[in-house]
Length: 197
Image 1 (cartoon, rainbow, N blue to C red):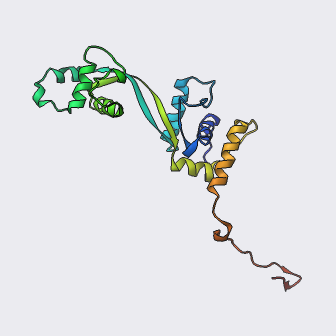
Image 2: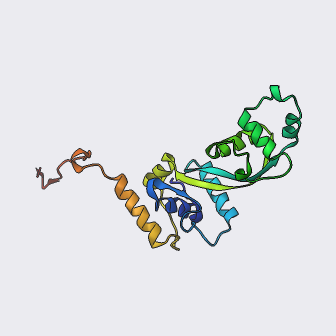
Image 3: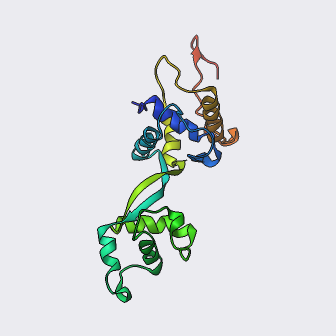
């Protein structure tokens, strides 16, 4: 029996089909289900990620030092078990909670999110605010939409735009030339004892 997704989750998947390579930043365009709060939408994306249908990046917007991180900074600086860039991040948030753009200028901006995530996993900083960045449809999500999706019900849950994106997706995934498709030939049907093959 095909998996029945709640209409809100299906709308989120179809929303991704409207973007190139089925990838979209949550800040781009109108979000799916604009009537829902950002927190509720993030929860929907998390549920879809748990099912394996999407993946996404998390962007930290505010963080502060944890007690462990503060203790680490008080140790002998020549033997700290962190890289110089990680040390700069810890020193930057030593006195207050900060945004990633407030980290010491010596830390490359394109590495800040990864450094913050690593330090948070080690328990050296605590993340106080974050949001979803880019979201993308996984191979499992594409397979579900192409082969298993069978919505049921009386009330239409998708807009014409989402339906159009789904139809375009189905056409793109069915681009196998007819000459290479496997066609199962049916045996001729005998009529009146004669084979009309």
